[in-house]
Image (tube, rainbow, N blue to C red):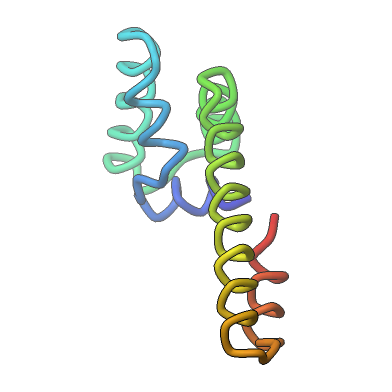
Amino acid sequence: MVVYNDLDEGAFSLPIIHALSCSSKGTRAQLLSILQSRQENNGMSKDVKKLFVQKLEEAGSLEYTRNIAQDLSAEAKQKLSVYEEVTGVKNWIFRLILCHLTL
């Protein structure tokens, strides 16, 4: 799961940023505490990662991220269609890339 990789790397991905900005003070403090402990302990256990992802789900952050990705995918496909219509040429390489990026 991508979120697990982000937790291992210490990245602040969109679901994490969303959860931190939309959660209650208590949940935000818990998430920040988990992130801080990751730095101090050189990583997170599987159980802590599961708890963190559960908090992201409760905050609606994974669904929010999924919706953003779907919107961006639809917009890219629409722009590709316009480009192909203007040029009169199908861009199969870009279509393949979009296919691989689709959730």
